[in-house]
Image 1 (cartoon, one colour):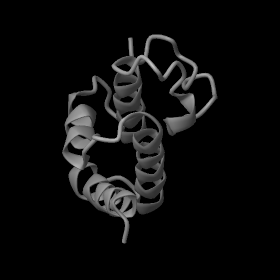
Image 2 (cartoon, rainbow, N blue to C red):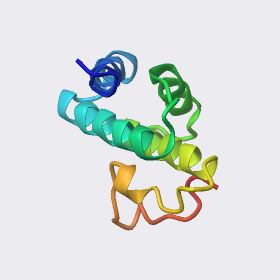
Image 3 (cartoon, helix red, strand yellow):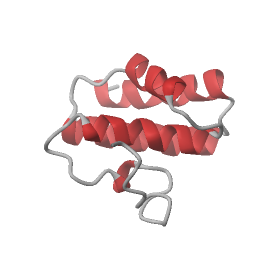
Length: 101
């Protein structure tokens, strides 16, 4: 198993455990985080993702995950659009410019 696969698998499991996320949603979130990690943040850890979600100012898991990805993107000057990595994608919520600012 590659390091990227291990990151994605561990993150999906932790999202279910820590936040009670549905397995399918947790898998999608982990896949999105892994893609962001591969593209922009090679040193991103499972612990950092979990901590960012815990700190997000929203109630629902999906909104909290999206906010965390937005924050990671805001910290990375090379990432100008994090919608591809958010669970809400390119929809109205995913396009909210206040997330990650």
